[in-house]
Image (tube, rainbow, N blue to C red; front, side, top):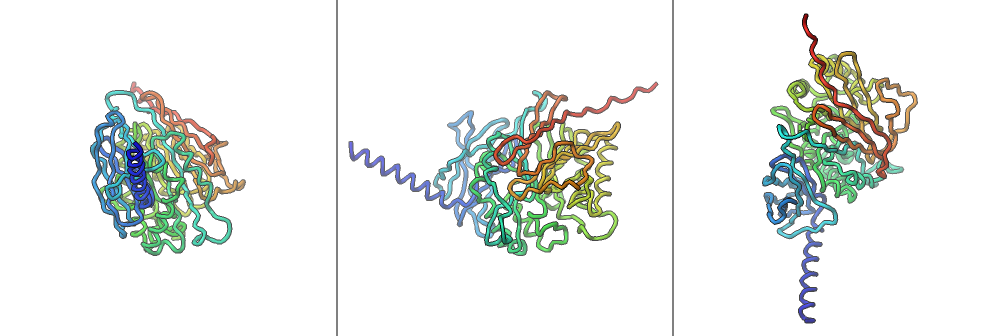
Length: 451
């Protein structure tokens, strides 16, 4: 009897040691990337070359086990891997387990994802919510500027999952490339690895799909644009560390993508790769480039989604004339072109989802007999929050919506078909509600009868 107990304890200790040994090879993740009806992309990073794969199972049929492909991580790709779960079915919830070198990795937080529901022609649109935010600065003292760290309050990443969002949208400045980083592949991958390895961030990454756009600090130096000489490497770093549905659309290259969730479309734009330099004096300045802009227009016109989210790094609607808002540095003509297109084509329920400003706010453009346009800005997560600027004039800002503390957003979609409601809730670092705002689905006006 004693011998049997000792054998059991030895076996248990051996299994625990193997599990710990595999966890010691894990650098960051696992992370859930995009999720669709028939496939979900998963991501992981190891500390050295290793074989990685993931086992997953449906909560409805836990006895059925499925495996992703196996990938051997390599130094040239920062030991990252994308693992495709392609045996899923619509409307199911899954749990998953990471294996490194064929050995199970035990984690102390939930690893789960869900596939999109097939609701069209069957039911009303599903209710869902998603979290969002921009400005994820993680201190690294030896490479930061002297003085007090620019980042902090990392517990915000633990509080986001507590609101039970279905997915997370990262609104740019998801890392902050610094002087030692942006001129080399080594520096870029170091910065991504350092940020992605934050312990507080792991449950958020592992427990829901994560989608991302980039802004200047993911792309290069502050306020960087198409002229940045090393943009191919920073775009490659973005692609290695995120698992969006695509990297570019059609023949258009860049950090551009698209996805749907429920009755909403998300147009993920790149405002850096084709951007005219801010201080270049010329007419017809662009943030998106002609091809990307035309792609956006075409898809807004063909979209059947209730709400159409245009996800872009910098603020679109505000006319405050400060920093890298769309109305500043000579980009106002392109801003107006987009507004005119939305109005002329009567495209309703367009929501710009933006970051960058180190403050959160809601701006609304209402015009008589024309679709209302919204801009929901959510910033910053863990980078420095801007002080309130009493001299900033923002006539389109919703009164009371300005937030000057670190925060994240939770956007909830509810209601029956043709009666959908979007509720935007802002929470501080500790998960306390700061502000909320509701948008009701705007219906197309009935055509006037001819006499």
